[in-house]
Image: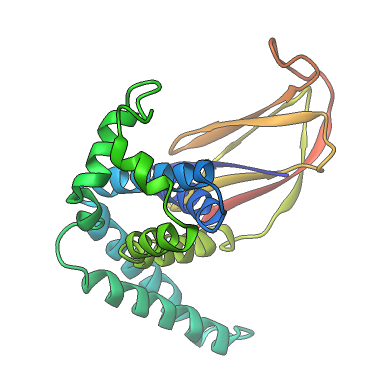
Length: 251
């Protein structure tokens, strides 16, 4: 069981997009109207995040930065040069795909009258009912193959974004490895090197752990509180000392 805490807005956006793409890909192939609604909701949430004018340039800049950071490693001993070259090529391909998209990412989704009407009405609690959105009611009643064709078409417009997001998150998560650590009375804190670009804090606990991790952090320091899960209504920090695994992702 892994808990992740992004330490900057760019990493936070990557995690949110990754989560929404995971939801979309889970619900998209399912054969019932409720799953189609959930897939549509994830698609709309992605389009809202992508409406920010700087998302496209941020993704490209991050890939540029990672490429510049990783390329010199080819001259180091004991480096898997084939794997490194594969990563660098993936970064270049993903950048090329994003640059090939004209205008804002997901602009086609936001220009759809149907999707806009669903977005506006479903912002109201219970607003997706049949009398609110008769066109959605009709669309949900279509054969699955027809619905899936339309969903695949919408998803294809943002496929390059998904690829870029997963590529960057993969590099962040694998930039360092997990190390064993000890929390005293359910608390752990650590200073961060000022010269390092720390992207994310990751905590790994056993799947049957009776505690969960609350991570908070900033540019110079982070802390972890391990909370007792026995009382869901009033969780408290455990008083026990416990071991866990820590991954401070720096790239």
